Length: 335
Ligand SMILES: [Zn+2]
Image (cartoon, rainbow, N blue to C red; front, side):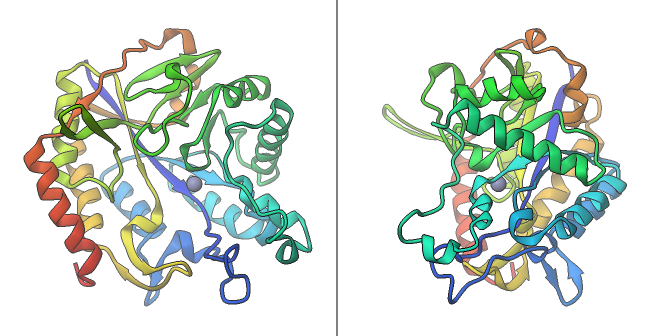
């Protein structure tokens, strides 16, 4: 059996420190996605060029509540460009952007600060957000989304109930290495799962360190894992008969920058190299791996999910190598 691989790109603007210090910082729009350096886009541009070169379609989870600050045009234009390049568009929401509905948001920061999490919310609130997000997609002339990714992969059971009510049938809301949901049946590490009537394609979470009974979990991202580590996980997933594997990335993972304003950008040669090696590997190993989009899961009913929840382990020597590589990558500008 081929292992399906979903490349997912959370495509979002940045608050850029504005909630902490609105005098010094302003939110960052297109540049947070394009990551232009001397006229060349090292974020979205690099991703689209790389996917095209290797004949890959990825899923872009596009954040739409930024419209409350930036209006429709900036993200809509990016979404249309991503779609025109043959990729899949699905819904990503960061409720913190709805804070800008308040004209007096700067004055409010101290008394009623913004929140971004989607767990612990009422069904009414979730339903309103989901319908709002779907409406923005439709207003932009895009196909109605079938799938959701919640802000920062924070979710609970109520999110799935709200999704059912809004006709969103597929989710990729879970990455246990980033956020561990309270409900044990949402603590999913790999594969496809049925949650009510929703099909959850969780981001792959694996064990990267184990000291005695202390287990450290990590979710698979481009910036977080070396190529050697990712390759081992792919091969182990296939050998373990895992039906699908989701990788998470963002356009800004392919540049280095100063926080919080995303200034002083440099290309991240290490992370760009990791994605290119992954794409080349997938192109060469079509007998074992099949690149798929989340949108293609629309035809799968949730009850058909196998639901096996294999927890893979990365080889310790590759984890050690990655730790060194990531420290160098973080501290050496030209890598
Ligand atoms: Zn996000």
